[in-house]
Image (cartoon, rainbow, N blue to C red):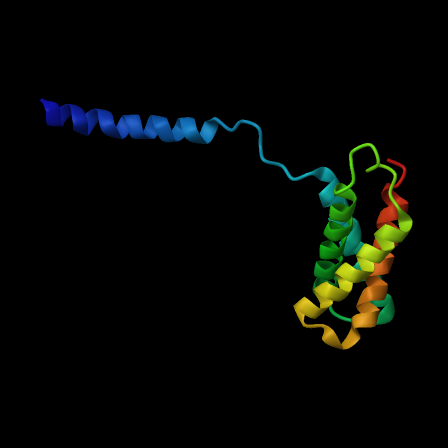
Length: 134
């Protein structure tokens, strides 16, 4: 009788516990919408500047721009919440230039570091202009 109970109860108990574990986190783990916004702005801006300069592929420029947007957001996220809405233009442009130059080196686009920095500065400026009022 003991084996019969184990064979019938244990699978249903396991199924119930797995269902409970997967249903408990009812709130989805969503990324911060400001980070996604800045990553999107960065990707689009860097694709446009890359196309204007005739440098790199669309996907490569989007990756560099997204990383730059995340870096600019991260630099502003380090500030306290009261000052986070008052972004500093020089900080956004500087962080954008540095992050894009570094991302270009990491992704293998070492031949145009200055151009990557210019693209990143444009990303930082675009993020500053589009999000400073919030």
